[in-house]
Length: 524
Image 1: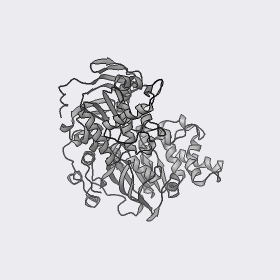
Image 2: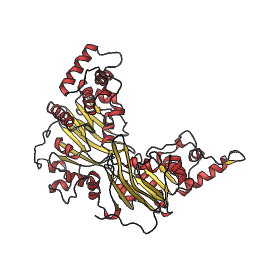
Image 3: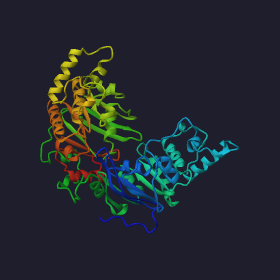
Image 4: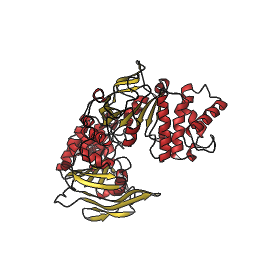
């Protein structure tokens, strides 16, 4: 694969050798990017690749340690997002960052209200807002509140605001993450029109289908560096996935059946090992479980005493599925059965009552309460299940905490030590203990080994494997494909918020998983 051939026109924007470090972490290392007028240039990469940091440098949130930014051939150094916007670099973020209580027109002109005779020109503002939206083929009543319109229209309003003035570059950071397919197509129709008008568009996404539907060129980032720049038409999906995850270029899988996307019934028994959970009864069945703009309807079965792995790229829908199963987000379609009986899982309390625990991937914000002690963090889920009127006796708390400190090998001076004083691996063990204290029948582990050392990873996964042998069901999510392949009894591969295939143990290898992710063969 050769790098993309540069267009013959002069670039609008050039980033040359951009580097940025934070407290010893090299977030960006000599990254370069070139953006031309009349193109959609997509930025791809896994979590931690450096995409967000690069955008923050470009938009003035961060100052680069090294490198330069050229806008139409002139060196610039934006000192803030407002400075970048005044220079002609506008950004629309994943979350619509506007005021839902204000009108559409007011949202477009916040901070830049047109004036007439020293007062806000309300009529002129409405006319200009309507004209801006007309440019995007959106015809709505701009006097109505923003909240009265669906999210897709709110995105168009955010784009209109970004285009107000003399925008030369439009950056779209994950703008489709909460949109359904029709809304995505509406957005892409607008982007194609803007491209025809000569706008330079930098598009950041995790979705492969969307990348190939809208992109002219693709820059792949990995571990804070630019892996390469490619013409979209010259880069296959398998090659793109390989470059994102750092896997060696591969032809066909060593397992021919798996690479063709076999169904579980076809693959069962053809792997190199025996599926330990084969024939066991189902603990949980989800049928058509989905959430508009978040996850397409999914069927999933988790058997008693098995470790079911979810594989896929960031943004594939793994975490969204986990949150729906735990009631952290509310599904708007489908149903869930526990031990064959339908259960409503609308809140985490419902999930806990059904015997389900959940270790979130966001350990800092959705897991550990850093100011509380090891003991107190362990007791949170059990106390929530019992209710505030049934306090757990202190002696019982201490007994449980001491037991799991010893069982999990948690390194802490005392069970009364604040969890914030522990290493990341030991914090993760405390959060695992929090759910084990609650004696769940099923445990959802979302990236339980991210950011911890190799020994702690091994200790956690060995303990989890032991729980399965004792009959606990585990739903395991990890971005590390070798780890998913090594520990799972079955694997469900996800892609673009849908399931792409389900496979027995050893029916896939790393290369064939990447092919399934890229091809999206639907054989569930």
